Image (cartoon, rainbow, N blue to C red):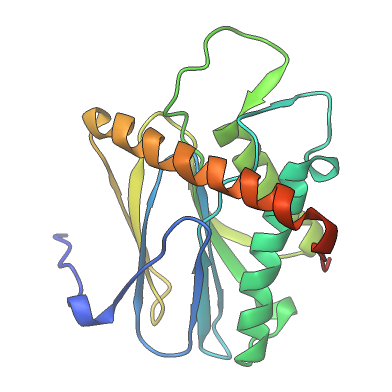
Length: 198
C-alpha cells in the first residue's frame, strides 16, 4: 500500500526535548537517531501525544539501574510532561497505550565493554518506565543502526516509519550531540530547582 503524506497544515514537527498533545486530527512527526519518541493515546478520550527525548549521557554502566542515574531523571521528566498534558485534556492514565520508536546506534562507540551507549539506555529506560507505570506497549520499532522519521496519526493512532539513509547519520549525530550538550549544561544551571513527579 502506497503511503500518501498528510497535508502540511496537519503536521506538527516535534523537535528534541519537545512534546505535543492533541485532541483533534494531527500528524505528529519527528526525526530520531539515538533519541526515543513515545506515542501515547487514550482512545476513549480521543487524546494523543508524542514526545522526543535524549537522555543525559552518552554511556552508562550496565551495572547501574537506569532509574538511579540522571538518565532516569531526564526520561521521567520527559514522560511526565507528556502524560500530565494528556490528563489535562481528559485522558486517563489507566487507559493509556504506547507505541515507542528510536534508540538507534548511529555512533560506533567501539568494543565490547561494561557500558551502554545512549541508544541502548534510551530503549532500556522507556521499556522500564512503561512497565512500571502499567502502560501497555502496543508496538515498537527500536534499535538498529539507522535513523528514522516517524509520523503518528492522532485520529487512527497509526505510526508510519521511514528509515533515513546511512549517509545522513553524521548530520543526525551532530544535531543530537548539540542537543545533548545543551541539555547537560541546562541541567547543571537548573539543578537546585528541579522537581520531579513520579
